Length: 311
Image 1 (cartoon, helix red, strand yellow):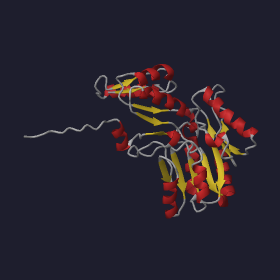
Image 2 (spheres, rainbow, N blue to C red; image 1 turned 90 degrees about the vertical axis):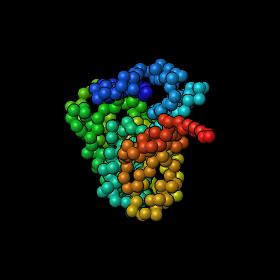
Image 3 (cartoon, helix red, strand yellow; image 1 turned 30 degrees about the horizontal axis):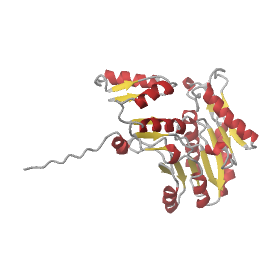
Image 4 (cartoon, helix red, strand yellow; image 1 turned 45 degrees about the horizontal axis):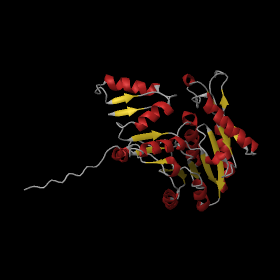
């Protein structure tokens, strides 16, 4: 039996999944959708003796609370708690391949994905030319209602838009330069939560824009000189969910994959978790345990040893 508690702002799609499951013949009670607020329904589910395993996606703060509640009854937990994922671009990378992927990784779902590539670390030799090209690409981005099928849709709610504004305001006060922004189209309703994608450069490693998850279409660019500095910057956050490494050097590809502290590392590509067969999850404050693949199935099962004496 599976019980799913979706976020209160995004429950309709899961209700539809339950309807489809019933239509194709899922047994009654096999899939259960429970809606409501996290502090009410989520807390009750985490404490319920009938729940044998908890898989949670959300913030590190709420993940900690769920761990504490689950620990009271020794319930195993899988946690996916977001990221501040870097895309690391070396001077020998194929920039024509880099640009569309880097753009998509931060504007997909308006940046509201745990695996969003929200930092781009660029080797100093190509820092200026790549930023120029990325800037032109950002300026071409259009934001509007989903029905218009543009590059970026709305943020999910007003409080999330305010969070993005707060990050951008802090960046402005800190003197962090803006390279480019996309455009919210005139047809977009004023009451919608539309946010122009924004590219910022020379972001200090200690600034909150380089440390905290924005969950919006804001890309922070930083430069590095060599592998060691790239690794130091990539690992300089509490998160470790996804990383992208762009280089033609095969040996460097494997060195970076080993040294970057991340649950997933994409070489010369980047995806929102990859295919369903690829285990997805993080290290550090990005959580532990894995979703997808056989590793996820192992997390939801318990090994039982049965020893039978014959004779």
